Length: 357
Image (cartoon, rainbow, N blue to C red):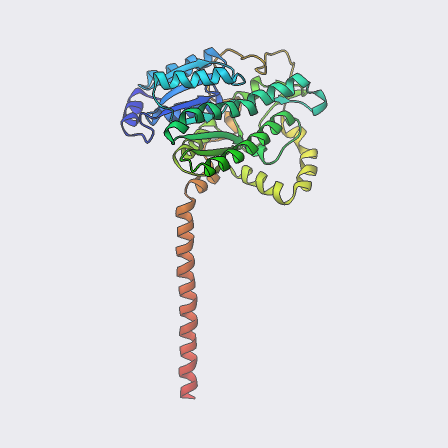
C-alpha cells in the first residue's frame, strides 16, 4: 500500500475515521482486512497473540499514513478482550465495527485429537467469537449503534472430516449469532450482526496449524486469496446483510447440506482425505500455533499463490444482487410485454382474416 494511495483513500474512504477492531489481525484474512480498512481511512485496533505479526501489521498501516494500535492477547481470555476494547475506545474512539476473525484448528481424525486440543480449538474459535461479541456489545449498546462481523465459513454449514474440532466450533458460532440476532430484534436495537461465510483461502493457517496427517495440509479447491475475504468483510461491515457468502463453493455447501446431506457424507468420506493434503510429507517437527503463537511475520498469504484466485464471481453477484434482481425483473417485464404483444397482434391478424373470409 503506497503512502499516496493511503492518503487519497483516507480522505475519501467510506470508513474514514471509523474505529475498527479486528481479532486475528497479525496474518491471513485479518491482516488483509486490516490493510483494506486502512485504505478506506479507518482507525484500527489490531488483536492477535503473535507480537511480531502484529507489529508488522501496525507498521504497514502507519507507513501508509493510517492509524493503528496493536494489542497482543489470547481471545480465549474474556477479560483481556474486554480490556482491549476499553483501550481501543480510550485511544481511538468509540468502536464502530468489531470483526471476530481469530481461529485455530487441528488436522486429524477424531480419535487422534486430544481432549485438550478439542478444548483449545473451541476456546479460541468459538468462545473467542462469543467473548469478542460481548466486549463489542458492552460498548455499542450504550450508543445503540455498531456492527459486529463474524468471520464464518462454509464449514459452518457443512462439516468435513479431519477438522471436526474446527467445524464444531464454527457450527456453534452460527447458532450463537442467530440467537444474538433474535435478541437484538427483541430489543429493537440498531446494532447489526452479520456473518461472512468463507471458502478455502490461501492463508498461513495451513503452514502453522497443528497437523497429524501424513502429508502437509492444504485448502480444498477452489482457493481464493485473502484479499477476496477482506473485500467481503468490508462489504458486510457497510451493508445490512444477514450473511455474505464468498465463493460458489460456499453456496454449494449450504444447499448441498440442506438437500443431499447423505450424498455429501459419502462423497467427502471418499475424497476429503486426499483433498486436504498435498503430496509433501510432513515431518511434524515444525512449531504450530494451537497453544502458543508462532511468533514470526508470515503476512497475509500462504503457500498457494499460484493456485489462488483473486476474484470471486459469487461474491460479485452477492454484492450486486439488488441491481441484478431489478435487471432480471425489467428483462422479464420486457419479455412478457413482447410475448403478450405478439400474441395480441396474432389474434388481431386472425380476427381480420376471419372478417374477410
